[in-house]
Length: 198
Image (cartoon, rainbow, N blue to C red; front, side, top):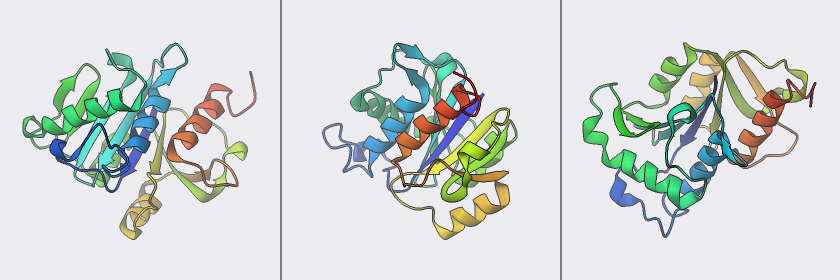
């Protein structure tokens, strides 16, 4: 399974803080929506074995599991509406037990540390960072979990957490990319077995 953990530093954790008419004004929710769409969608379908976890303000994590997603469309407003629904269900998330928002979408009361603990048990944790080793020189791991940030850099505490938790730190290229573009590059790398087959 491929997993992506995207840290949204400024995203509201209250559904009322999200206006579908102003997604950039909601902590750059537009960027996080594009990460979800890039993570789970193909041109005419949904990937089989992918999950995208959005860590919102280090308090809540919204998970999109492609294997069971239904009625989700790749446009930003549609994805944002599902995130808003997830945040509205926060009262139903008790401890680390998730709230089931809709098919394939869950909300957990977990920040970054707890989310990494949960997903790292199932795969190889890879920190995406511009100062990492070149992706092109790495071998694709089994069940990778890629961790990346939104438009902000990781905080010092997040960077320290990742330094301890990550199995590797890699860079997708010589230039800084938008988070959703980095997800696309990673998918292509995995789809082509490390750029070895097409």
